[in-house]
Image 1 (spheres, one colour):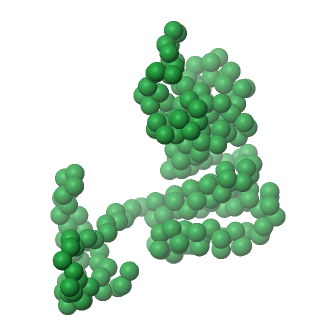
Image 2 (image 1 turned 30 degrees about the vertical axis):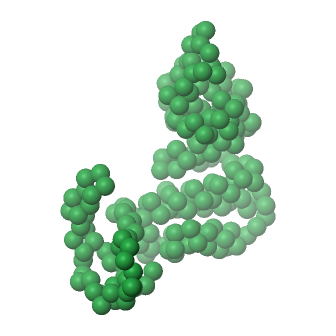
Image 3 (image 1 turned 180 degrees about the horizontal axis):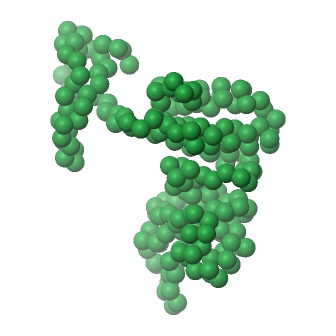
Length: 223
């Protein structure tokens, strides 16, 4: 975006679809006039809410652990992987990213970078290394990808989609509204364990949680 048409602002009020903000500098009206010369349509702007939290050391370690998994499986050097995923992030957002201490990138920025890497791992069936946990900011996306790819939340083995809340005896599953339920992708071993321990004890043990799936995803998964 042209620097003369990009501004920062502080939100003063937000009510559903109406937002009031104070712009941090004077608008370049003459520049805006040239942009809209001869144009009679609505004037549109893009709004990006900036995460005020800087990314954490845990996030940095997590990203490099994921890169290490890919290196161990493919032999592709870490620096080459960084070039690839950093450029994917830039192509998607239009912004650069850095994990150096002096970086101004935020927790949300690095969450997105990690999700991009997770996409690659799931797409190419790259095994996860034991010894680190999926960070909370990436967990929901990770659990969704596990369901979409039928990989066990816990161990990554081939999985079935498990109703976290029982549908109930005698119900017609084809007519039941499954969007009202939560789901987990579990291999046979961990599916048996959740029935033995009970749902909450199982989730507490492995620090996982069930997720909701929309109708389109459920249809694609054959649920």
